[in-house]
Length: 156
Image (cartoon, rainbow, N blue to C red; front, side, top):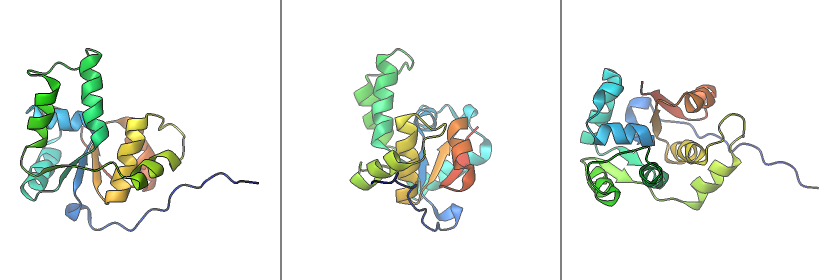
């Protein structure tokens, strides 16, 4: 008889200021587009500091999400999405994560609850695996991470 898998065990985290920042898709879009008024001033400062230190992470699912938003007409870019992604990933201190089997499995094994969006689950899993601080304005993610499953920085 098989038992239901339990939530992956959290790893101890270094101090928040030393963590890389994993930007949720909307935060990445706002930051790359210079749309900073959507972010709190302290969040902008943390992102700028992380950029100078080479500690900004972007998940491959965010690249997919940008393309999906453009295709659905929910995101208008001033250039083709391929060019936008290339430029946004070339900003100082920005690194594209690998989509590892560990991160994919971690995302699948997170408790269901109200965090049902696969991209959100992958971002949470990546923050845990990479020991990064997830920067998001999404209420569902903020509520899910209240229990200390990963570090989070409320963007808005």
